[in-house]
Image (cartoon, rainbow, N blue to C red; front, side):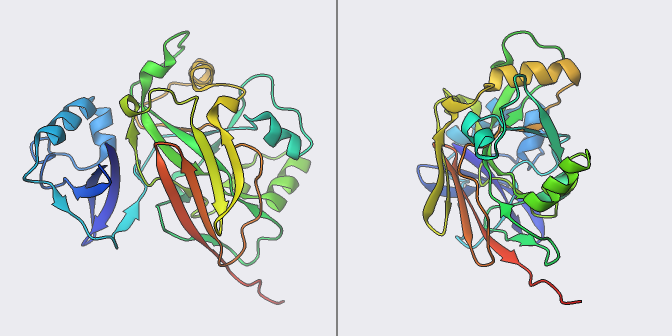
Length: 288
Protein backbone atom coordinates (compact mmCIF):
# COMPACT_ATOMS: atom_id res chain seq x y z
CA UNK A 1 0.00 0.00 0.00
CA UNK A 2 1.53 3.28 -1.16
CA UNK A 3 0.09 6.74 -0.51
CA UNK A 4 0.22 9.77 -2.78
CA UNK A 5 -1.14 13.31 -2.98
CA UNK A 6 -2.80 14.98 -5.95
CA UNK A 7 -4.78 18.06 -6.85
CA UNK A 8 -8.46 17.93 -7.73
CA UNK A 9 -10.25 21.21 -8.47
CA UNK A 10 -7.64 23.15 -6.53
CA UNK A 11 -7.85 20.99 -3.41
CA UNK A 12 -5.26 18.56 -2.10
CA UNK A 13 -6.48 14.97 -2.16
CA UNK A 14 -5.16 11.73 -0.68
CA UNK A 15 -4.73 8.65 -2.83
CA UNK A 16 -3.58 5.10 -2.29
CA UNK A 17 -2.05 2.63 -4.72
CA UNK A 18 -2.45 -1.07 -4.10
CA UNK A 19 -2.34 -3.97 -6.49
CA UNK A 20 -1.30 -1.60 -9.26
CA UNK A 21 -4.54 0.41 -9.02
CA UNK A 22 -4.74 4.01 -7.79
CA UNK A 23 -7.70 5.15 -5.71
CA UNK A 24 -8.92 8.42 -4.23
CA UNK A 25 -9.63 7.82 -0.54
CA UNK A 26 -10.31 11.44 0.40
CA UNK A 27 -14.06 10.99 0.59
CA UNK A 28 -13.85 7.33 1.48
CA UNK A 29 -11.61 5.78 4.10
CA UNK A 30 -10.35 9.07 5.55
CA UNK A 31 -13.75 10.69 6.12
CA UNK A 32 -13.94 9.72 9.80
CA UNK A 33 -10.46 11.05 10.58
CA UNK A 34 -11.06 14.64 9.50
CA UNK A 35 -7.72 14.68 7.68
CA UNK A 36 -6.64 14.47 4.06
CA UNK A 37 -2.82 14.68 4.14
CA UNK A 38 -0.52 11.80 5.01
CA UNK A 39 1.60 14.16 7.11
CA UNK A 40 -1.40 14.81 9.36
CA UNK A 41 -1.80 11.09 9.94
CA UNK A 42 1.90 10.75 10.73
CA UNK A 43 1.83 13.63 13.23
CA UNK A 44 -1.32 12.28 14.92
CA UNK A 45 0.15 8.75 15.10
CA UNK A 46 -2.84 7.50 13.10
CA UNK A 47 -1.04 5.99 10.12
CA UNK A 48 -1.71 2.40 11.24
CA UNK A 49 -5.37 3.23 11.83
CA UNK A 50 -5.64 4.69 8.32
CA UNK A 51 -4.07 1.58 6.79
CA UNK A 52 -6.52 -0.60 8.69
CA UNK A 53 -9.50 1.51 7.59
CA UNK A 54 -8.49 1.33 3.94
CA UNK A 55 -7.95 -2.42 4.21
CA UNK A 56 -11.51 -2.92 5.45
CA UNK A 57 -13.15 -0.68 2.89
CA UNK A 58 -13.96 -1.60 -0.68
CA UNK A 59 -17.07 0.33 -1.70
CA UNK A 60 -15.80 3.87 -1.12
CA UNK A 61 -12.51 3.67 -2.96
CA UNK A 62 -12.85 5.88 -6.04
CA UNK A 63 -10.79 5.33 -9.16
CA UNK A 64 -8.93 8.42 -10.34
CA UNK A 65 -7.96 9.56 -13.85
CA UNK A 66 -4.46 8.91 -15.14
CA UNK A 67 -3.95 12.62 -15.87
CA UNK A 68 -3.93 13.83 -12.26
CA UNK A 69 -1.68 16.66 -11.08
CA UNK A 70 0.72 14.94 -8.69
CA UNK A 71 1.90 16.72 -5.55
CA UNK A 72 4.82 15.90 -3.20
CA UNK A 73 3.53 13.29 -0.71
CA UNK A 74 5.01 15.23 2.24
CA UNK A 75 3.98 18.79 1.37
CA UNK A 76 5.66 20.88 4.07
CA UNK A 77 8.43 19.00 5.90
CA UNK A 78 9.65 20.91 8.92
CA UNK A 79 13.18 20.03 7.83
CA UNK A 80 14.75 18.43 4.76
CA UNK A 81 18.21 17.19 5.71
CA UNK A 82 20.43 15.84 2.92
CA UNK A 83 23.46 13.63 3.46
CA UNK A 84 26.80 14.60 1.90
CA UNK A 85 28.60 11.95 -0.18
CA UNK A 86 27.13 8.94 1.62
CA UNK A 87 28.30 6.50 -1.09
CA UNK A 88 32.09 6.08 -1.47
CA UNK A 89 32.06 5.84 -5.27
CA UNK A 90 30.04 9.06 -5.51
CA UNK A 91 32.65 10.87 -3.41
CA UNK A 92 35.39 9.36 -5.56
CA UNK A 93 33.86 10.55 -8.84
CA UNK A 94 34.43 14.12 -7.61
CA UNK A 95 37.94 13.31 -6.39
CA UNK A 96 36.92 13.38 -2.73
CA UNK A 97 37.14 11.08 0.26
CA UNK A 98 33.79 10.37 1.90
CA UNK A 99 33.31 11.99 5.33
CA UNK A 100 34.19 9.69 8.25
CA UNK A 101 31.11 10.83 10.17
CA UNK A 102 27.68 11.82 8.80
CA UNK A 103 27.61 15.31 7.28
CA UNK A 104 24.49 16.96 5.97
CA UNK A 105 23.02 20.19 4.59
CA UNK A 106 19.51 21.62 4.27
CA UNK A 107 17.07 21.72 1.40
CA UNK A 108 14.15 24.15 1.44
CA UNK A 109 10.48 23.31 1.06
CA UNK A 110 10.19 25.93 -1.70
CA UNK A 111 12.37 23.68 -3.88
CA UNK A 112 9.89 20.76 -3.78
CA UNK A 113 8.21 19.49 -6.95
CA UNK A 114 5.83 16.60 -7.54
CA UNK A 115 5.98 13.59 -9.83
CA UNK A 116 5.80 14.52 -13.53
CA UNK A 117 6.32 18.23 -12.80
CA UNK A 118 9.17 19.87 -14.76
CA UNK A 119 12.59 20.56 -13.29
CA UNK A 120 13.01 24.23 -14.24
CA UNK A 121 16.60 25.40 -14.77
CA UNK A 122 17.01 29.19 -15.09
CA UNK A 123 18.74 30.36 -18.25
CA UNK A 124 21.42 32.24 -16.35
CA UNK A 125 22.64 29.15 -14.46
CA UNK A 126 25.95 28.09 -16.01
CA UNK A 127 27.45 24.62 -16.14
CA UNK A 128 26.14 21.22 -15.23
CA UNK A 129 22.87 20.66 -13.41
CA UNK A 130 23.01 17.10 -12.11
CA UNK A 131 20.46 14.47 -11.10
CA UNK A 132 20.94 12.67 -7.75
CA UNK A 133 18.52 9.86 -6.90
CA UNK A 134 18.13 9.36 -3.14
CA UNK A 135 16.03 7.33 -0.72
CA UNK A 136 13.95 9.76 1.33
CA UNK A 137 13.42 8.78 4.98
CA UNK A 138 10.34 10.27 6.67
CA UNK A 139 10.50 10.68 10.45
CA UNK A 140 7.41 9.46 12.30
CA UNK A 141 7.86 10.64 15.88
CA UNK A 142 9.68 13.30 17.88
CA UNK A 143 13.17 12.13 18.83
CA UNK A 144 16.23 13.65 20.49
CA UNK A 145 19.60 12.12 21.42
CA UNK A 146 18.84 8.59 20.31
CA UNK A 147 21.41 5.88 20.94
CA UNK A 148 19.57 2.81 19.62
CA UNK A 149 16.35 1.88 17.83
CA UNK A 150 16.40 4.69 15.29
CA UNK A 151 14.52 2.71 12.63
CA UNK A 152 11.59 2.58 15.04
CA UNK A 153 11.05 6.31 14.56
CA UNK A 154 10.78 6.04 10.75
CA UNK A 155 7.24 6.49 9.39
CA UNK A 156 8.12 5.50 5.85
CA UNK A 157 10.03 6.21 2.68
CA UNK A 158 9.83 8.19 -0.54
CA UNK A 159 12.11 9.12 -3.45
CA UNK A 160 14.01 12.39 -3.75
CA UNK A 161 15.97 13.80 -6.68
CA UNK A 162 18.55 16.16 -5.16
CA UNK A 163 19.09 18.30 -8.27
CA UNK A 164 22.36 20.22 -8.02
CA UNK A 165 23.80 23.21 -9.92
CA UNK A 166 27.49 22.25 -9.96
CA UNK A 167 29.00 25.58 -11.05
CA UNK A 168 27.16 27.40 -8.25
CA UNK A 169 28.19 24.68 -5.80
CA UNK A 170 31.84 24.94 -6.88
CA UNK A 171 31.84 28.72 -6.49
CA UNK A 172 30.37 28.45 -2.99
CA UNK A 173 32.87 25.79 -1.97
CA UNK A 174 35.81 27.88 -3.14
CA UNK A 175 34.46 30.90 -1.23
CA UNK A 176 33.74 28.78 1.86
CA UNK A 177 30.03 29.52 1.59
CA UNK A 178 27.21 27.06 2.38
CA UNK A 179 25.75 24.97 -0.45
CA UNK A 180 22.29 26.43 0.00
CA UNK A 181 22.02 28.18 -3.38
CA UNK A 182 23.09 25.30 -5.61
CA UNK A 183 20.58 22.86 -4.12
CA UNK A 184 17.51 25.02 -3.66
CA UNK A 185 16.30 26.56 -6.89
CA UNK A 186 12.55 26.15 -7.28
CA UNK A 187 11.76 22.57 -8.46
CA UNK A 188 15.26 21.28 -7.54
CA UNK A 189 13.81 18.77 -5.06
CA UNK A 190 11.38 16.49 -6.86
CA UNK A 191 9.75 14.12 -4.36
CA UNK A 192 7.40 11.17 -4.74
CA UNK A 193 5.40 9.84 -6.31
CA UNK A 194 4.60 7.77 -3.23
CA UNK A 195 5.00 7.69 0.51
CA UNK A 196 5.47 4.04 1.50
CA UNK A 197 4.88 3.18 5.18
CA UNK A 198 7.85 1.52 6.87
CA UNK A 199 5.94 -1.74 7.40
CA UNK A 200 6.09 -2.32 3.63
CA UNK A 201 9.88 -1.78 3.42
CA UNK A 202 11.30 -4.53 5.66
CA UNK A 203 14.94 -3.77 4.82
CA UNK A 204 15.64 -0.22 3.59
CA UNK A 205 19.35 -1.09 3.34
CA UNK A 206 18.78 -3.64 0.59
CA UNK A 207 16.99 -1.73 -2.18
CA UNK A 208 18.09 -1.25 -5.76
CA UNK A 209 18.42 2.47 -6.55
CA UNK A 210 18.51 3.65 -10.18
CA UNK A 211 18.41 6.89 -12.14
CA UNK A 212 17.67 6.87 -15.86
CA UNK A 213 17.81 9.82 -18.26
CA UNK A 214 15.87 9.33 -21.50
CA UNK A 215 15.75 5.61 -20.70
CA UNK A 216 19.52 5.25 -20.21
CA UNK A 217 20.66 4.07 -16.76
CA UNK A 218 23.22 6.46 -15.29
CA UNK A 219 23.07 5.51 -11.62
CA UNK A 220 22.53 1.88 -10.62
CA UNK A 221 23.43 0.71 -7.14
CA UNK A 222 21.94 -0.57 -3.90
CA UNK A 223 21.22 1.17 -0.62
CA UNK A 224 23.48 -1.45 0.98
CA UNK A 225 26.35 0.68 -0.39
CA UNK A 226 25.60 3.58 1.97
CA UNK A 227 28.55 4.46 4.20
CA UNK A 228 26.33 5.59 7.06
CA UNK A 229 23.14 3.57 7.21
CA UNK A 230 19.75 5.01 8.09
CA UNK A 231 20.04 3.97 11.72
CA UNK A 232 23.39 5.72 12.23
CA UNK A 233 22.45 8.91 10.38
CA UNK A 234 19.28 9.37 12.45
CA UNK A 235 21.20 8.75 15.69
CA UNK A 236 23.86 11.30 14.72
CA UNK A 237 21.35 13.93 13.58
CA UNK A 238 19.35 13.54 16.79
CA UNK A 239 22.45 14.46 18.79
CA UNK A 240 22.43 17.91 17.23
CA UNK A 241 18.73 18.65 16.80
CA UNK A 242 15.26 17.42 17.60
CA UNK A 243 13.76 15.45 14.74
CA UNK A 244 10.03 15.96 14.32
CA UNK A 245 7.27 13.94 12.61
CA UNK A 246 7.31 14.71 8.90
CA UNK A 247 10.98 15.71 8.75
CA UNK A 248 12.65 14.16 5.70
CA UNK A 249 16.20 12.88 5.32
CA UNK A 250 17.66 12.52 1.82
CA UNK A 251 20.09 9.68 2.47
CA UNK A 252 22.69 10.31 -0.24
CA UNK A 253 23.20 9.34 -3.87
CA UNK A 254 25.34 6.67 -5.55
CA UNK A 255 27.89 7.23 -8.31
CA UNK A 256 26.91 8.13 -11.86
CA UNK A 257 25.47 11.62 -11.44
CA UNK A 258 25.30 13.61 -14.66
CA UNK A 259 24.02 16.67 -16.43
CA UNK A 260 20.36 17.27 -17.26
CA UNK A 261 19.67 19.01 -20.58
CA UNK A 262 16.59 20.75 -21.87
CA UNK A 263 14.03 18.17 -23.00
CA UNK A 264 15.46 15.31 -20.95
CA UNK A 265 13.21 13.03 -18.92
CA UNK A 266 14.72 11.96 -15.60
CA UNK A 267 13.44 8.83 -13.86
CA UNK A 268 14.47 7.97 -10.30
CA UNK A 269 13.50 4.46 -9.22
CA UNK A 270 13.89 2.70 -5.88
CA UNK A 271 12.83 -0.90 -5.48
CA UNK A 272 9.40 -1.14 -3.85
CA UNK A 273 9.09 2.63 -3.45
CA UNK A 274 8.25 3.64 -7.01
CA UNK A 275 9.44 5.64 -10.00
CA UNK A 276 9.74 9.44 -9.79
CA UNK A 277 9.63 10.93 -13.29
CA UNK A 278 10.30 14.57 -14.19
CA UNK A 279 10.90 16.33 -17.53
CA UNK A 280 13.60 18.98 -17.69
CA UNK A 281 13.04 22.51 -18.97
CA UNK A 282 16.20 24.53 -19.26
CA UNK A 283 15.63 28.11 -20.36
CA UNK A 284 17.84 29.61 -23.03
CA UNK A 285 20.51 31.93 -21.73
CA UNK A 286 19.64 35.54 -22.40
CA UNK A 287 22.12 37.51 -24.43
CA UNK A 288 23.56 40.68 -22.89
